[in-house]
Image (cartoon, rainbow, N blue to C red):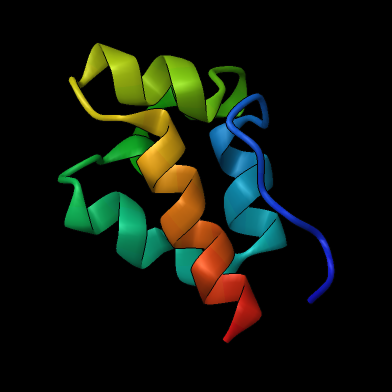
Length: 67
């Protein structure tokens, strides 16, 4: 996969682009996929609301894409 994930992408778009990103969301305890906000909230906003570093999450998801 050649597309990189960024923190300004909405959560559903990230999961559609990189389905394996679900494991990162689960690792952080984010139930974003079942949340209505996932359709319009970007990763940065979601991570900050839950007290996580969005840059770290993006790095981990992009590392999955490279594998």
